[in-house]
Amino acid sequence: MGTRLLLQDILQINGIDPKDVLLIRHSLGHINFRDCYEKNCVHEYTQIQPDNVKALSEHKYWMVFVSAGKTHSLFLEMYEFKGKQPLSEHKRIENFPHQEFYDNKSGKDVVYMLNETELFSDMKKRLVIDWGKGVINWYNKGTIEKPIVSIQSVSPKPFPGYERLVISHSELETLVNDVTEEYREYQNALSAVKGIYLILDTKTGEQYIGSAYGDDGILGRWWQYANEPFHGGNKKLVNLFSKHKEEYKNFQFSILQIFSKTSTDDEIIKAESLFKKKLGSRVFGLNDN
Image (cartoon, helix red, strand yellow):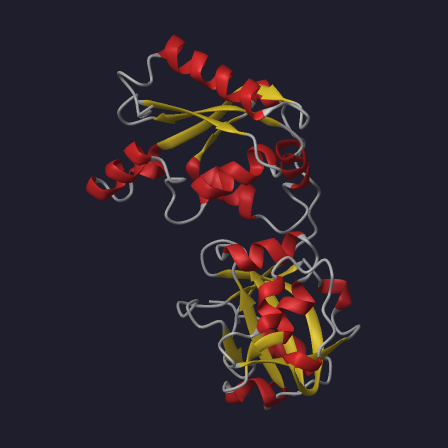
């Protein structure tokens, strides 16, 4: 068996003692972080943390990662820790999507002043490590071994077109949560339109027809199926998963009709209702209205 290359090896090669580094892992499965990630507010989100986590103040550097499927984590940024300040003294960032964070209703949060660095700038959104089984732990000391999975050089996959897009749930998870450039064209295309989509249970043949008319388009709606609890709030899917917890793994996703972002909700809902009637998904499928 070959020798594994560890994150700690790369740190040491570049003259950084792993003891000086704190590893932070954010998850796109958390809606608050996802909002901040999409608004390019990862820095601000990372800075606002509880005052009672001792490790946060004990390290010179914070190395920030984002979930990249299973236990893999993609490197985003290396910050230098420069002290703390009360949230009340911190200038609000106008485009930060969760302004309520600044209110600090729990009274437990402070701002960890993090300066951006050029360290490992050539590996941003390229370096993938295995966080390990303890992904529930959103931070680890830099001395804990983290194997390097890959250093990516990825070209975007070409989007096949709305009418030809047919993907499994596993593929949907990858597409929606991908933070490299690989699925950029897919994400751009799906977020640019509203539409009617079809979910097929490939095990039973049952169909669910849904509509996406929010600001994030089809991509925003499908994110709810790609991440826990996977049912998107649909009554029959909730009931189905209560009996068969992993049935979502048999789901296949495709698009029936697209609409421009200027289309009204009423237009899209009427089209959705017509598709339900045509395909019988209320009587024989997974639609309950």
